[in-house]
Amino acid sequence: MTQAQEQISEQISETPLQTIDLRHEFADLGIGDVLDQLDSELIGLKPVKTRIREIASLLLVERIRQKMALATTFPTLHMSFTGNPGTGKTTVALRMAGILHKLGFVRRGHVISVTRDDLVGQYIGHTAPKTKEILKKAMGGVLFIDEAYYLYRPENERDYGQEAIEILLQIMEQQREDLVVILAGYGDRMEKFFQSNPGFRSRIAHHIDFPDYSDAELLWIAELMLQQQNYRFSPEAREAFTRYIGIRKEQPLFSNARSIRNALDRIRLRQANRIMAKLDRTLTADDVMSIEAGDVLASRVFAKGAGEGR
Amino acid sequence: MRVTQGCFSFLPDLTDEQIAAQVQYCLDKGWAVNIEFTDDPHPRNTYWDMWGLPMFDLRDAAGIMKELADCRRVYGDRYIRICGFDSGHGWESVRISFIVNRPREEPGFRLDRSEAAGRNLRYATHSYAADRPEGKRYADQ
Image 1 (cartoon, rainbow over the protein chains, first blue to last red):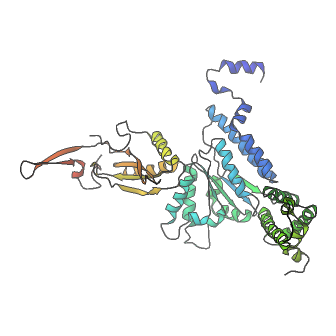
Image 2: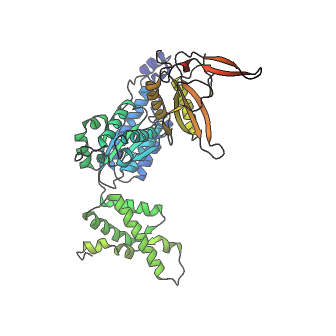
Image 3: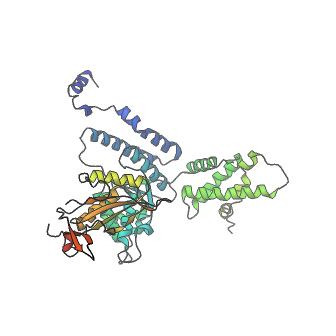
């Protein structure tokens, strides 16, 4: 700020909120911590993080504008997360609630996670109260609708999903201050869902696409998961797991981080089995912590990958 | 005559903001909040009609304020109250109840005396509003 500008701002300082110290405002909200945590705990997801930073900046500016009485309308915060299974949509939704809460755009910051079953009723007249009850529970927080495209089933014209969609749209529009709705689902199906429900697309301000993880990122995720559970790979096991990721990725039903977690669960099972096989010895902490190459290589994935298929 | 029952009834009518704050207090305490309405103002009329089910597991007052708005749209000419039920062990009862909506005009009560056997007198509180059939008691307002 130049001196001239400073003088001007002092002249009009009887309305106290003409100037706001941005750094102070930023630090005050603790939002930097949340974003840093997002960066450090979530691996990869570069475009998602960039987008969340953008949204956070927008909301911060919006908040300042509110303080200066410049904001006229409440920003639309409904979001849609699309991406393949296991790319972290739910995890990010939970974090999003925290960010929105810190910025003061949702009052409580809780997340109600629902799927079609929780919103759509089984008989006529059952859907509206059911949907409304969920919406009431979610007020003041975030409503996370997983696999949102299931709500709309064009093949059955008597499906009650449409009713739930209409109530959702109504509340999303009328009570924007009270509730943030996040839809999540696989990219192509969500695309179809939005095409058949144009009202939804226009009411959602932020469409975020979650990319698949690279091999290196998946290995990183695996190591992080193991570290959290107090395990670790031996160097050979790490090498074997890198190969495992390469082979597993080519196989059907690969769901990114979720597949990694399941693989690790099975590896831990095999490790426990290997330890139990030799009863007559004393174990060190190191023995029960380390995962050997054999534990990884016993996976069926390798058998299939080598074309021996069971 | 202004009906005074439940909390805050000697105060001026609560604004929506104040109601929301009270409801939030109930929710923070973990009570189930429900909305009830009636057009029979008699003080011994304890069983009011319920507007939907009690609302469990809510975190924010906005959901209840929305239901209250809906209830007012339909029964805006009647008494509406909000109750907070505490299911905690040892309480298991309504902890708070306050009127959030009342008819624009409350005609009040008269005292009926009837002579009984001997020189006994029996008293009855008779609501003027209840002279008319249910649903039409405050309808012309």
